[in-house]
Length: 364
Ligand code: PEP
Ligand code: MN
Image 1 (cartoon, helix red, strand yellow):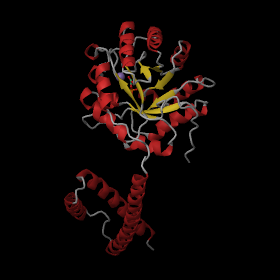
Image 2: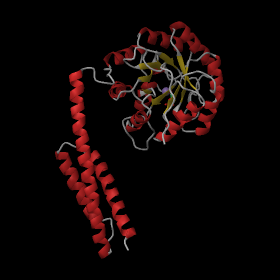
Image 3: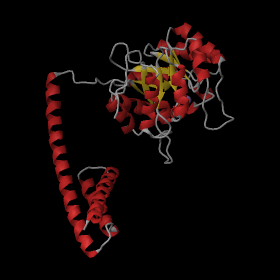
Image 4: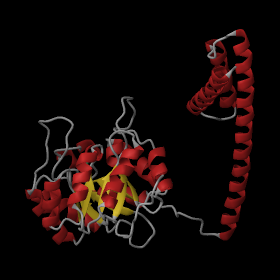
């Protein structure tokens, strides 16, 4: 059973309630002037709600820039003093938490690699007991929603109620145009289960390159995300980490300018009525779909009984191949995507096999 997360604070949402909560800043703090210059340029955009910079960088391979360490916290303090904006930092262990809190960091985030490890998350949660600080939890590197929810619960049980989630995509063995596969259904399921939890998108780590950032940021807005955490560096080509995915502050300004923010609900009564009618037809069609699927399974069971009489195997590759080819062809003529058809047929076929197997197992 899913228990509701206790979220009491609104500080991870856009102050006006419309638009999006934007956290921006370099992937890594490198020098004091780089941090402060990036921060000042970002603040000038007038659309940023918090600054970010990594001090301790979890890197896949050693011998890459692993962060400047604690001295960077002082630079973040200078950036905060120069801009008046709250600052966010990644923490991966208890020492990071104490140091960040001691220097007045306003928002902590738990990185994707740390979220995968319940021991680390639990230790961080214990260190935060009794402390009032907003914490963002990035999704784990692997597409495991329960691990993500589990990390949020560990913090929540330790009394952290200003919580948010950050979707940064998932590692995949498949090569896609993304650095990390977005798998949008996972964050959307998180939002379905925990609608009160602010959900931000990190397009930088999803994309891995500048070209896709606008498109992914817009998609997040279309899907009702509450904000973005996006990397921006005063001189991206000279960045010591994630250089291909960082934007100059002015480029980030252009991206945000073009972004269309969506309302989370209809504003106009006529549109609302129309939406309700359309939803009613979807509800009716879903009922019909379910009824048809149930009928189809009953026919499958009948087939199972026939096969049993002749002691024929359940799985028939030739028949299955015919079904896939003919249904994908027919579906494509109705404007349905082949990938979708393939997945749908596989799920239905598996369920049919399960029904037939049950008939065979329970036969007298
Ligand atoms: C980062 O935000 O720079 C970072 C390391 O991200 P992630 O934990 O999502 O890989
Ligand atoms: Mn980064």
